[in-house]
Length: 112
Image 1 (cartoon, rainbow, N blue to C red):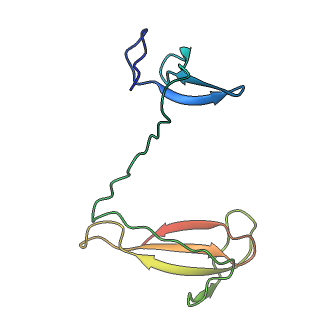
Image 2: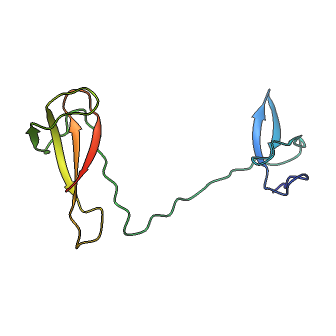
């Protein structure tokens, strides 16, 4: 590990013009790396709690989601959308309804 001599932050190795340099993410200080160092890998793990909910829709036309008419898309004005309901807050509060426009794919939410 290499630390910045200016601010003390951990420096990150980067390739710049075919050379390996250490760059400080805080102050921007750069220092050329020595040629005898071994390759480094920096990884970060994102921790999620059990309360985190993730909704992923991959298809342009989601299969299995019901459609509803009479809901106007804020982006394109289309009046048809797919919808699904998720309990995003505590159990004693109402659910959140999500919409995805069938025309432009814009996603928005409505609190019930």
